[in-house]
Amino acid sequence: MDKIGNIIHQREFDSFVDILGAEIEQAQIKLVSAANVQLLLHYWKVGHFIIYNQNRLRWGSKIIAKTANAIKAKYPDKKGYSSRNLTYMCQFAKQYPIEVLRRLVAADMEMECPTVEKVVAVVRLLNEFEFTQEPLAQIYSGDSLVDGLEIDNLENALLEITQEPLAQLEQLFKTSSIASINWAAHVVLMNSKLKLGLRYWYMKQTLECGWSSNILDIQVKSDLFQRQIKEKKVNNFTVTLPEPQSDLANYLLKDPYIFDLAGMKDRADERDIEQQLVTHVTKYLLEMGTGFAFVARQKHFQIGESDFYADLILYNIKLHAYVVIELKATPFKPEYAGQLNFYINVVDDKLRGENDNKTIGLLLCRGKNEIVAQYALANYNQPIGISDYQLSKAVPEDLKSTLPSIEEVEQELTQLLERNEEENR
Image 1 (cartoon, rainbow, N blue to C red):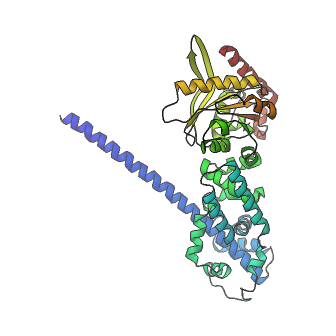
Image 2 (tube, rainbow, N blue to C red):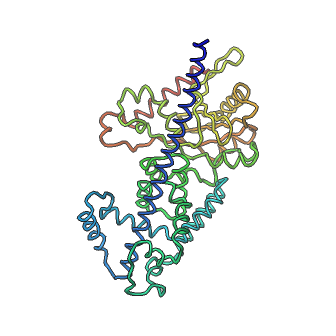
Image 3 (cartoon, helix red, strand yellow):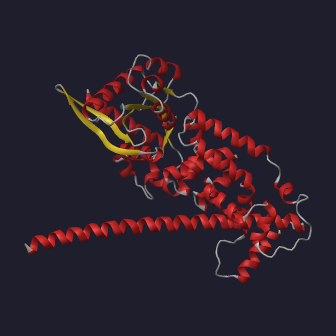
């Protein structure tokens, strides 16, 4: 009896430790998040303060370098106040004055259930607003400011600049999207020279997908917005899926997908790429998506007396649906849609549960004629999307000597897929 009691006691203790550990982890995340918001708010204030005094006292651009040197001399232990970073702080303040923050908070309400059409409208409005707003110099050097006014701290300067109570000002900042990502990500967006609407969209994606600043930089340079927010994608979602699932499926679909086979590990060698090529493609596809969970690769189904293998099966949490992906090393052919339709039917029958929505198919090809592809989908009652994919040629210089050429990689991918198709016949 004592032994049983000890076992029960141990289980209770283990459960207690698990709950306590979860609370500790959540607290750490909140602390880090809170610290990030305070850092951004501080940088935003510093940027405003520098710009304000540049206009008030007619200081030139050299004041930033002079300020950086003064801070370094007086506060040698304080990091993050280099001339370069102070310049970014000023740019940060210029890009996000009070009225912009209000517009971003309003945009968040519009983006609760995003569709391609809604995203395009929000981005366009934000871009137009940024284009028409007054120059910052006019905002900070107008009649409301008194020349020679003595400002004894940064908070008083902000009050004078904005005419807003400080508590409300800070709350507005913390509520806006710009407080949701870290400083490194903001630096990427500032370097990108994107307009306000596009910066806002990439902020939302960074938060939703958990991108690092490096991944954000890749997504910006690969023009993810244009690839995901195409107004004419090849699919039949509107006639095969109910709203709002059809809108969400269309929003999540990208065209083209870009697979960076060398980017899946810090270091890679030729043997690893040759042997794990399809696995790398799979992992990259997961990184590109949002809300996707991996289910299976080369999933085996025995139908009648024949064996079939689906290239890749994912589950999308937002769609509450399985997603079957077929990867082709050649341009689109109408018969490819028929093969994918078959796998959708099989997954619906074998895997789909009573709480799952209709299974969705995604056909990835090395190019397509969009008119032919759209005609090919006309008679299918299963939801299918057709997108191109590309192999990225952006390989770091220090890896080029150890990696095969793009042509060799594409040839290897073709051979792998052809072998799979032969085995499936």
